[in-house]
Length: 250
Image 1 (spheres, rainbow, N blue to C red):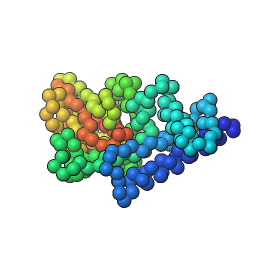
Image 2 (cartoon, one colour):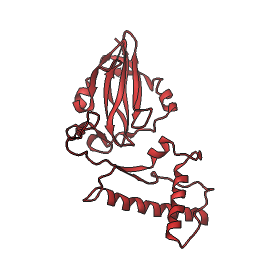
Image 3 (tube, one colour):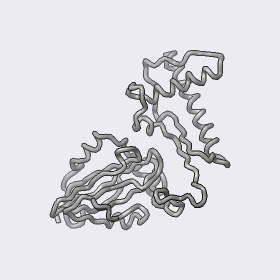
Image 4 (cartoon, one colour):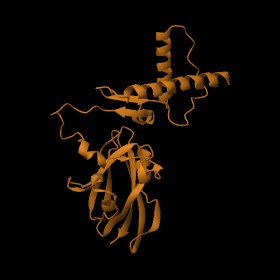
């Protein structure tokens, strides 16, 4: 029990450091370099068998010991490396300074495009579920309908989920519709962080994106045959969204 309390105390110290770091990063004079604020996820408890860092009077040595402990707690699977999912779970905030005048490239978001980023907890998005971490298992599970016989207009069909995340390998996902099938009654199931997305055809033709507004999203309809891609168009490192729609017979 004493060991557990000591480790919880260390976590509290780390959390205080996170609060201070957020204050330093997001204050009146944010830094001109990109920065990530890390901290324990909500509800995190250290492993029961993880020893607390040894005590030392050397501030520099104590700093290195706490950073080593921080790394071990982030390395949830004990592989000795921080995987993308482990990293994203600990991201508390992210700062990206604006580029210098005249350096805004086509691949970067302009200030006028920021309304296309959906942010969890804001406005009518506050009631959404928290989007899950992306993984191969999640991707496989979403290949099957979440429910059958779901009403959509004057028809019934299969309720389908598709999740994308702002992490390598999971920024896009396919919607495949065979001949005679259509996708409609689009809405959002879950959201995490900030993320925008677009829907394009297999050859890249634009169909819809989040700058076009929720009303147009609700009215969106995709007709088969065809493969459509749901793709992230920016947001925070922990950004994720689960969209849902009904796959019906035309």
